[in-house]
Image 1 (tube, rainbow, N blue to C red):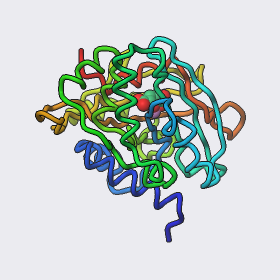
Image 2: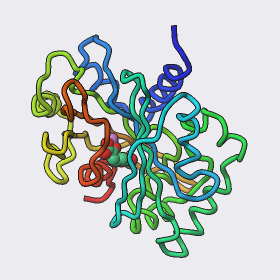
Image 3: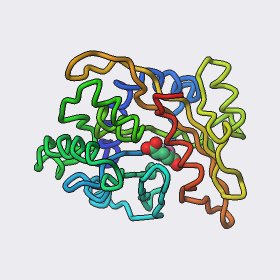
Image 4: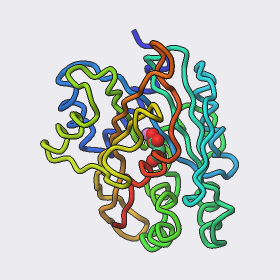
Length: 266
Ligand code: OOG
Ligand code: NI
């Protein structure tokens, strides 16, 4: 028996594993056949009409999600919001958007070309959330975007889809700490994001997070194929803010480092 929320996350997962070959392996390694509860799923977009953060969010609001926190990333020129459902077994949703007007005229024009190629009626359908790219960019254009914003480069190559799923360590049988999860991943050969340390956050901010570095996959650009970082897997442990009540928000300083899991350079 699946309801609309479960069907949507299943479709998002099926798309995600197509572009993230390691995700099923990580899932099997940690889950050992058990169900894995997702802490959250993350999306990226541009703040350009008609594909801004709120346009993606409308699909979750329609499924009973409510708006949570608001987050700003000054250096990366991003804004984000999170959404959560009354049923705590449903993943939270983290949606960010690039503040396009803060970049060069070249970047703005290229983003406009991409956004113009998105069918307006598709944006209104839940399938939009895993519809990928609707445009063609050359490898040179991808590199020019990366130079200004790793996030813009990633968007040009992967578009609209789950950027990562996140294992809830709180609900993961057999693990007490995020360190134990990280060790298991490293022993199996997965590379973790070390920006800001392997573990971002702490019990003091009620949230600890770690992530793999994105898989590298071959993408067909307009003019050539190239191997570039796709999507990653995240791991989160939440702490109680009141008896039996886990923190449900995000931590901007940690999120700032998690974004770097898709960095192509360095
Ligand atoms: C989102 C990075 C932030 C978190 O859980 O704090 C994040 C992204 O890379 O799109 O996922
Ligand atoms: Ni995340």
